[in-house]
Image 1 (tube, rainbow, N blue to C red):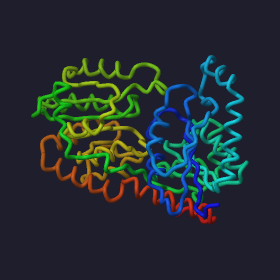
Image 2: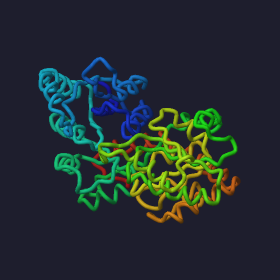
Image 3: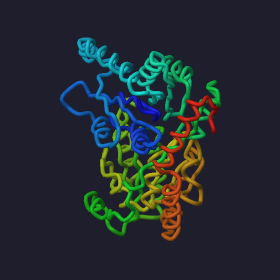
Length: 401
């Protein structure tokens, strides 16, 4: 029997989204002198290795448990539900195996996202095995969330919040501050090399080497602010006729079933800038996109944190964003970027133009932003804070903030 603290992560989602990326970085960087790290990750239920499992397979020094999870609680496809019902024996077998595994391996913490299926697995397993449950909140918590996840969060032993903005939302929802541990996100700096040459991407997109390039990267839906960015870009083009805009990301149809890309293209056409706005869809080479641009912008509204801001900063790029949500906790106004009030298109455009016209300012802000990622917004600091929170939870101490 090991005297290390066993931590089991629940990764029931097949896709590798921002929340899973955060958990993967914590998993990779937890202190192995103190913790033994275990991951129950979905096997996908088929022959294809899911993206989340593929990433987990690359992380050293973990015990990886490919697991058949119950269908997503958002699942509405009758055929998919029928297939899941047919594999109920396997689901029950895997659930029983997890409970037995927890008992055998000194698992004392079960850690999951706030997604409905994840939190239900977390709470049920932790109660059956008498372990502590940690639910990691990656979104702005609100009354819009379903009864099951809200019940699970309220009944978890502890809650991790990714920003003070999210922490405030949780306390307004009645979650005691004593059980909320604010662990600001971080990224792995080694994955972001500011010396990358972005000229190949410019050539691919037909953007001149001397053009001033503004880039935005995120899923495409209205709250990410791409509509406001296109409108601001039309104002920018009046003063900077060589400016170009690239928008990277796919439609997020879970929230908005109609194509937001199509709406943005129509808007660019109506504003007379369609030839200067490129929509690439989703891409896996985001460091190249960052390397190619001069300024990064995502004017999202009530962003819970904004990992992509850290990614831009790690690449030495100044950020233009909105002064609300968790964004000001990441992007320091007049130091690593420029922030404008929500809905103020002229102010957003003015901040973009201020950076486009001053290369020295871009370089100073970019250098400061990268220094902040190296010194603070990194995965190593995030994992150390998570580990310290685990120890406080197990020792019955209140949150440190």
